[in-house]
Image 1 (cartoon, rainbow, N blue to C red):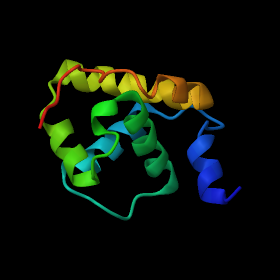
Image 2: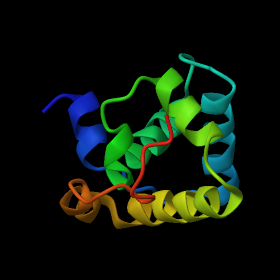
Image 3: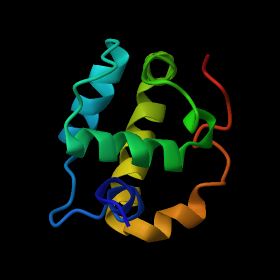
Length: 107
């Protein structure tokens, strides 16, 4: 199995991903960054796609627009779910088909 595929399937971290790391990644998406993400940031984006199926196929630009449209409570909830997804590792894949965290499309 290739290194990229292995990382996509098993993204559990040795140490829990901080809320700040997730917020920093979301901020990059909100401000339109489309490349130059670190491996940790790519894993955060992957977890975001898993916990919110409405962005599963979105570009980074579209994900940023979606995040920009969220309210504060919704954003906090999303950060918490992404952090839990990354802590759960492979178990998160079973949740990939669940409805959006917010049950709505922001854009």
